[in-house]
Image (tube, rainbow, N blue to C red):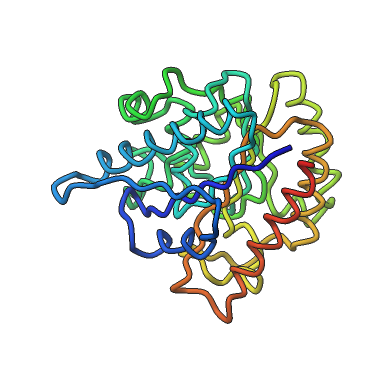
Length: 273
């Protein structure tokens, strides 16, 4: 299976700031670099729509060539361009993240857009933005599995409990182990999808492994737990696309996060072969 590496160096639609720089640390020959001209007067949502529409085209091109797009991105909103480019109602998402990313403008305490991508994808806010990116219909909540959760805003937590989104908290993983938590959820999802988009926010890792993130939590997955999860997922589903997001080199210590990211990418690629 051929991997198409796509570097998406944007933070909330803007290049050259914070976690936007993370993707550029992976710049090598043969890897596609997404470049979009953003005007100074473009507001955040316009910029996010522009860059993700361009990403969607790159993902669709990779799929047409029968390659698996692996996107390295500044933010989790790259998931919007990824899903628009995959163009399949039957593609589910397994979303590794310490946070839910399920806020809306009405529930978010901060209004931070990158706390909302999963809510956007499932049709809870910004429907016009989603259509501008190229995704005509939102994704069914039942096709989403969140793994590694440990930090939710109060109203976001309520919304997730009312939803059909599958959830595995870090607390549950600590109590039962990654395999026992994941297997039943994968079997439930297996009958509903034709493939999986694997989304990995690097802040889901333990802080000693990934200090270079903007929203660090007290705990997180070990590399062994992440590798075990990838192996299980690859056994149950065709992986249609992968994204690794939210690495901020400005906050990294001794390149610890970069080293963890490289190990994760190698593990993912090995499981796709």
